Image 1 (cartoon, rainbow, N blue to C red):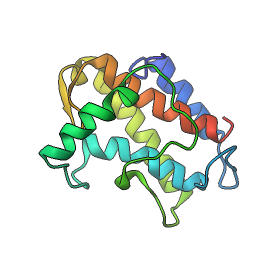
Image 2: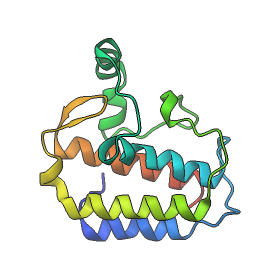
Image 3: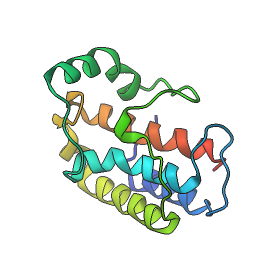
Image 4: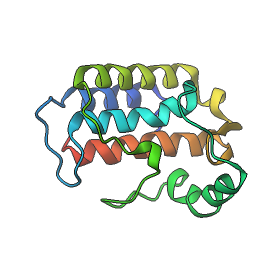
Length: 150
């Protein structure tokens, strides 16, 4: 798995994002490109912003038990997988705003570096290693950028 904490890899991802246009169409799925960018931003909102309600103890147990290994390992996501409710983007989004937000989040994450994330608690999965954080960040971005052909 590529390492989003490395400057060259973060830049590579940003270059892929910059290839998107407001008219980009998905190869699979129902999201518009602006919704996809907003969807990808949720991962970072959970880390940096206090926008989403934290799951209760039962839900965290279920997420750690049944979802965590699908998210933080190197195994790729399957197309059209279900997602958590707060990741579902139903309304229209501003393409340029969501694109800028995502690039800013990627830059911030890369600049903070792997050490910042090692043993940091995630919103849903408890304490994660830097490698697990990387897998979660990079795999999600790569999956959705591939969805839009970039």
